[in-house]
Image: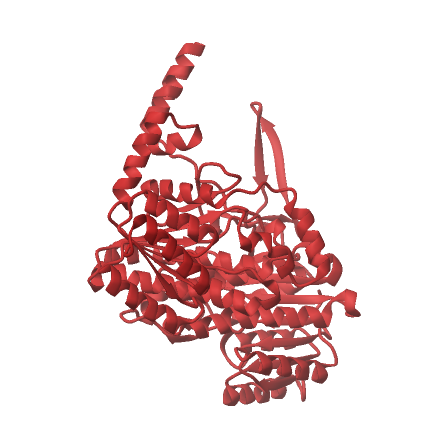
Amino acid sequence: MQIKDKRVIVTGAASGVGLAFSRELLRNGALMIVMIDIQQSLGEQAVESLNNEFGRKRAVFLHCDVANSSEFDATFKEAINILGGLEILINNVGIINETDFSKAIDVNVTAVVRGTLLGIQQMQKDSGGKGGVIVNISSIAGLQAIPQLPVYSATKHAVVSFSRSFAQPYHYKRTNVKVIVLCPGLTDAPVLESLPEGISETDIMHNRPQRVESVAHGLVYIIRCAQNGSVWISEDEKPVYEVQLPDTLPQKKIEVDTEDWHEINSRRKSAMSIFQISKAVSFMENKIDPSLRSLRRRSSASERAKEIEAINCIVSGKNVLITGGAAGLGYAFLNHFLKHGANKIIILDIDAESGKRIALGIAKSYGEKKVHFIHTDISNHKQVTEAFKEASSLLGNIDIVINNAGVLDERRWEKEIAVNIGGMMSTAMLAMKYMSRDTGGHGGILVNVSQHVDIRNTAQLPVYTATKHAVIGLSQSLSDPYHYEKTGVTVITLCPGLTETALTVDSPNKLLSRVMKADFVKNLEQFSIQTPYVVAQGLMTILRIGECGSIWVIESGRAPYEVYVPNPHTLRRYYKNNFPHVDTKVVGGRTIREVCDSTRTGLLSCA
């Protein structure tokens, strides 16, 4: 889209990157910009400066706390009235606040979701609009978690996933509104509100921060040239570049020692017979961890008995806390922990009736003090804090935490965010605190439950998908050696596929519109569904073999397999003559892919 004569809204625009965006857009011919920010004095100074530079009434400042939903709605409406329409929206507002993570979620996630929905509502073609462009500002932390910033990393992961879901053709064909993501590295004007104790700004900004003007130049380029749904990185004062993220997290390949491959190659060179080939394969299989090998085929009875014994060694005698344990996956987890000899189990759930009934039923079979139910609203940090305090007094020490509570309700997406991100963070942070060796704990295991999704199938669930991707960012931060070496807490992520729970069964009734419901039900029919029992059984295996930082998928009733988050710098997309380009040629019977470097093809000359 050309920027000349376009009407623009920029949030978080009073200073830093937002101000640089506003200045660069006006320099490139934007007709008028409404700058929204909570910083009244800085905003008024910025507008005066821009109007002196570019002419009267080219920039207007509106004071607003975007974390306040009603205030943001009213301010956005006022901005549209001032502009007389809208073609470009920059959702730039964001903060780094690791201590008050409710505020960080409200600003970094909820405000971006609300801004996107308001922007689409105003610009969508099927409601009389002309289409437009929305650029959601995430961060490099939204692609690769920063250990010192787990909250920030989680919120920025949510922005990336939400934007990609809303950019699916399902929406774009109807609205003609492009949704693009820009992920800057840290700039020389980061919004550092509050950092954890013992962490300074220098701990985070290892490299020389880039100038905000460099990021602003990149923004102008992607508005003009970027494709709908694309994700871009701006870092190190270099031109922006696109990264091609996978639709689903790639499966982790089993690594084998180089010497073993040399052994196989030497056998292959000597004209191996079928018998020799099978012998070589057996040789390789013997070099692979038996626990991983057994996941690829049906286990024999003796192997299964050994596995159960190994699981018992991990679970037996341990104290376990499960959130969302009164139904669905949580209840299945509870039964498997009981089966494998857990000492005591605490259930946290908002459903008081089901929770008490379960605790009473289990007491008849296992004894009164085996399972305790604590009525808790996971989205309420104070309640979760009190629940952990009570759990600690009941258990003495906590060994395993299953961070499972979640909801799916796109109609009440603020609640989705509060439970699935806020509740997940509350539980994870408290689990780390109570189990951490450096605060008197004994170490332990924290399992954060996310969701296995293919981004192409998430158009009807953009907020839910975003909240579950936030879990990936949170887990990747907390599992880094930076934390593990101090806490001794192994952090694992579990990503179940479609599972038969009340959340899934009722999901078609929790979408934004009836049209979405019909389309969603049609999509569901093509997927196989698994039982909670299978997922819980898989979790027991994961507890036995999963390492800190590992991400595991259980889908279609099959055995668990490990996936990973690829390094975004390895996903750079190359262009030739401003089009995505891949050359292929055959050499020695093998297809070779050759990519073209955009720096040599004038990509930055896009109109």
